[in-house]
Length: 275
Ligand code: ATR
Image (tube, rainbow, N blue to C red):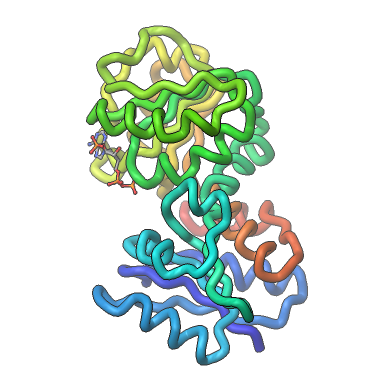
């Protein structure tokens, strides 16, 4: 039986085993998927031991995505752009590293939430790993403009500069929250970790007014502080990141198994359990 796993620390809360087990059942794939608590030191040894014991692939979560990037023998283009790896495949020619977070986000926005990004103005909040991880697929979706806004302006400016060569038609800028124009945007994506502490990035109220979608990469049983804030200021639709979680898993599964699972019933089931 082919073995897969997710590795992180902590890991007990991970929904990946449930998601991948549902995908496997749905598509008739003979495989197992377990959760592994990665040691603070010795991530690479743990991954190699799993591969040596018949492992075919692993998902990688906090705090190991950068170590997974360093460990991989080959990297996909999107993993290189993200500077982080969330999907490892153990192949005959070595360990292949990929990053499915960005594609997962875009699929959730465009397909599950019917929010096309082409020709739109997207405000991306945050300039850490979560933002960097999704920028390549975000730019590939063809927005007219992407504004990266961050608490520390210099990080947003540096990230915009880094991705500038990958822009075709998109205008890409980085700035501090205080420099965000008080004018409506089409889509706002919160990739900061502010929701962990129920904080909301300080933005002009006008950015939310009539905004098609305000999306928080975090998720929980209840709407996040950011979602409530956005709705109260006129966002047409708000959503959390549970769909992104399921879609990044679907992309990893498709990479490993060559079959694309139907994410909708799995997302519906998870949503029910969260409530
Ligand atoms: P991640 O991998 O989750 O992106 P990270 O690389 O540590 O983690 O980045 C966290 C992001 O959330 C950063 O953009 C951070 O802003 P700074 O670059 O100024 O540190 C942002 N962030 C964290 N707490 C925040 C808060 N309370 N309000 C606004 N932004 C916050």
